[in-house]
Length: 437
Image (cartoon, rainbow, N blue to C red):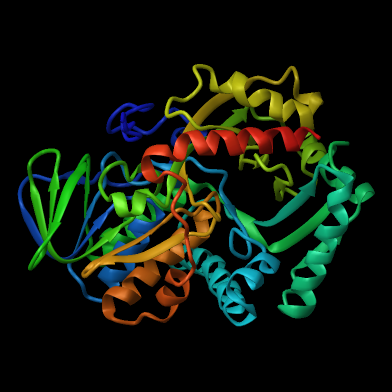
């Protein structure tokens, strides 16, 4: 059966996509290409949040680290996403309590809180210029959802001691967003949003300063795990290491089928309007928070530092991006903000993330000396960053947080890797119909 190569299907090799993020990326010193065989303590595959954070935390602990990125650091979903740093896991605590019990659900909540904290602390420690702003507003697009959202906010306040969240009613949310599309929601002011590519570039610079060796345009084609882990690249070079961290997420392709059968790449898309000016920007999102709504195929949006609307919406399950991404996403934006119908859209781009069957991330020791963290299911800015620290813990032999995450049961997709696409398309077609009901 044909297996698409998401590393090359939609993008130019070695170049960032033509996104708003790439156009406003901070300038950092370039990284070298791999020019021969290397040996190290830990080889990290993937230059997104998981890999960069792993390299940083491992190097800070004195390990010699080689990181291999197929294109450019932050090239994948880490540099293309909505930039939202949310609270909790991808699944709500009610679901997690049923899934793993109250005690482990509490541990998962605490780990998720650590994931927000580590993003904020890394920004401060390494002076990363990434336009951090506080606040995420959850917006319900159906009136019947509002009571559940308010009850959940109250649950977090009373049972988890999380006082940064509060309920929002219909009148307030329509004033906050300048849209009649929503009926209520909740506001979380310890969550936030940032420029994800600049955050990734900041992590890369910090990892390099800590001593990690980062190589770009180094596509890993295979690995062998014998007395050592031996990684081979498309250029024929080899890296020999004592340990390996796989941080490939949606771009894993055929590198590790034991992981691929439990995670699946899907494509998501974002547009950026022209700068809107202070008055219109304030009308659209009064308090400059990020927004994520209640649709199953979620709309997520926020204002950029220069007052553009960055709007994400729509998913595809084939491996090719739409020919006209701007036209693909614009109807989702105009459904919420019809007043933007005459506003120019300056950028439109896509990216590939990875989901799991139950939308919880997949942490595993694949085999002796090989660790992976992937499948963040659209909730990866914070969790993938923390995953790097958890990987460094695991390599060092401290397994407490790794075990909590790896004990979550992640089912294989029906039919495994080969049939996961047709099953997903059927399921998502149903949910897209549900969104319209």
